[in-house]
Length: 253
Image 1 (cartoon, rainbow, N blue to C red):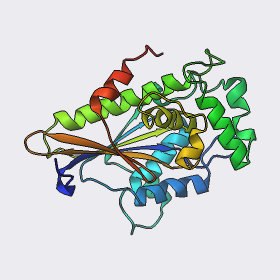
Image 2 (image 1 turned 90 degrees about the vertical axis):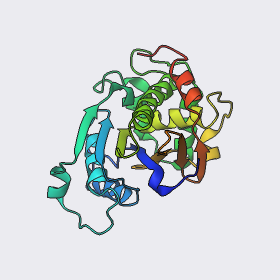
Image 3 (image 1 turned 60 degrees about the vertical axis):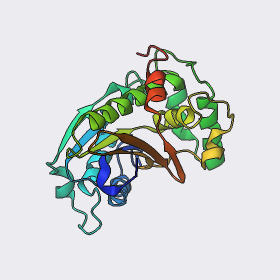
Image 4 (image 1 turned 60 degrees about the horizontal axis):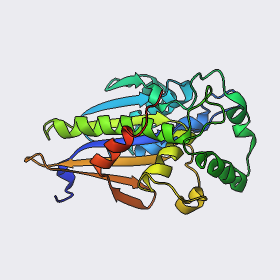
């Protein structure tokens, strides 16, 4: 089907939280990163559904993002950030990277100690190449399971968009963490059969603060649909059957 603007029935944005301080809280710059991302993102008139990991910095980033979604003119206001009304917010454990946010274990306790970009990319590649193994299985799921969790969230949102009539327009905004987004990209961009050892270099580095990917669902009056993924300069059709097969490929906690 043709990818006409009037046929977009849902936009799914999945973003990393903004900049955090030493205590893990969103900084002022983090709020601004969320706002700027929102201003740059296409907006559909309709509901705004926020789904996030439950961590404050993620929720605050999504509120900043949603308040300024598609609006390039409005001035920044803390009241506007706090008083957004046209949205529904939900916490999903599928978007968490730790089983218990108060226990980071050994790997993620020292995760932020590395500041050099090249070292950060090496650290991310080492993590992604664990694939279906977690060195701390009681602390965090392996990368593959993180990817499956995200796939399940996306598949559910895509199903909602494709089973409702075209007149229903919805903005889904998923908020999560760097390892979770990168795990999904690692599998999805390699057709769920990862082989690359230096994946971050292939895509231009790890996902930045308030950066993420977007999925647009196009649907016409006949019910035909097409789902398009976009991350940086990468554009790809989403094979819904393969996405759902991946969701069911392993049982996850």
